[in-house]
Structures are given as structure tokens and as C-alpha cells.
Amino acid sequence: MLQRAAIGAMVATILVGAAVTAAATGGRDPVDPTIVLNQNPHLGELVDFTTTYPKTVKEPRIVVNCVQDGVLVWGEVGTVDWVFKLGGDSSQWVDNGGAASCMATLDNLIWHGKRTQEWVWLADTTFEADPA
Image: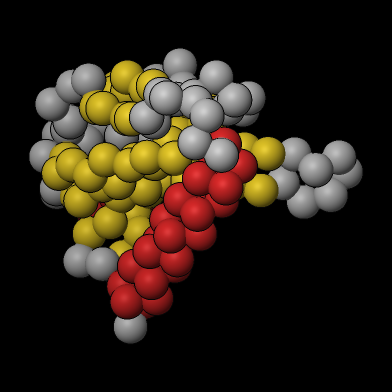
């Protein structure tokens, strides 16, 4: 049940983000957003990503979430130059060990003054992370 809700939320975020991005840029910026993992991922390994995005994107962020059997076991948010330690130093994934299915999204963080920020999906990639 939790897995279906998580997948539904991801799909909704992707669809809304894509529509907002298309409307906001008006098709004027020819750069297609991309995100690519630079390493062969393993639990505990440091990984980073190569990204491309339109110059209209002012606050790009990468969000990495990993699941085992449909349960979120680790997640982290960083800037596009961030180096992520898969599983971190303390997480359910580190406790469990084993492989995990992961998704990294490239998002644009938009601030509305003192109001709530908005996360706009730009691109994503999925990968399987092996045990340590």
C-alpha cells in the first residue's frame, strides 16, 4: 500500500512538474534537462551526477531516494555539485544492507519570498545500487 502511494506521488510530481516547466519556459530555452549517474553504485559509495538544464533554472537540486521492497530506506537532497554517500552514515539501508532501487531527480527549487518553496521536476534517472 505504501509503495503504491509513493509511486503515485512520484508520478503526480513528475506530471505536474513537466507541465509547469513547459509553461514557465514557453519553449524558449533549447536545453533539455538531463541527469546521469557517474559511477557504478554500491551501498556506502560516494556518487555524483552530471546534469544539464536550461539557464532559466536558478536553484537546481538533486534528490536521491532508495527503496528496498517498496520501503524508503534512504534519501538525500543536494546541489548539482553535491557528492552523495549512498546510504549515508546511518539509515535503514545501512542497517539492512543489501541492494536497493534508487531514483535521482533533477529539480528546480523556486522560492516565493517568505512563502513555501516550490519543487519543479526537470529530469530523473533510476539505478540499482549493489550491496557494499
